Image (tube, rainbow, N blue to C red; front, side):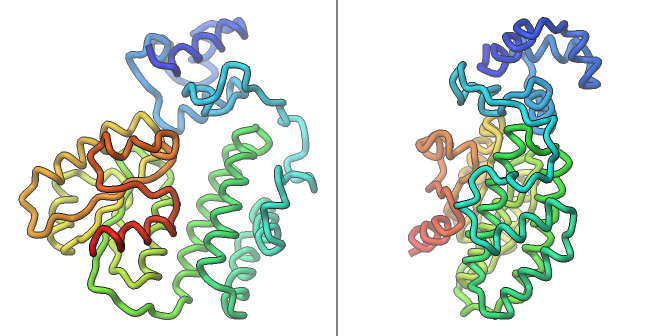
Length: 303
């Protein structure tokens, strides 16, 4: 039985809740909850977040990555736009704090203008990605995990950031082109692609030709893309640990295919951050925990 199945059942019993009550509250069949507890089914990412919010625990706790006694106080009754909403404001620059405040107030146009002006003033684009996009997304994830913001806010922040990231990236001067190409994608079922999008943009800044395919790409289509774009590297992102098997299957397909050029495979994402040696077990050529590290690794692999 998986850690998720054990902890779900333990939380339900501890809170004296019946399976039928959970099914009613979450809008799923009772048999689905039963199968979750038996370990014969596993929820998708959206349902996993909903279950975590329902029991007021972190996703890490549900998946067994956090210890049994890892609990946190609920902030659901506090105003969501308190001045002290940042969990660790010292990790954010003043520009990042202003950007985050704008988006928390639903002011995406103001947030976009803030960063466009910063780029026009000469702010380094990589610095904006690392110190603003990356740091604020981590902060938002922390706030959501501790129930200090609702899932709609997390989704809005992420989607707005992805849109602003594309607009800001369009302002960068053309990089000196390299004769290398990278295809990037998220494994099937993943809901958020912003991490792998950041990786793709960093590779473009380094002069690589990049082709972002999103998620849920059939393996046969990926193989066609690898030949069509003459890919030197394929970067695969996986957030949820229960999607790792699909990464392995995808990599096996790449290895067994008769490609014109055999691309190197780099993996990354939260699932691989939890287990630093997992990349070897899925038969990848390397693992990167950040966009900057992916650029360094990709250049090393193709030399």
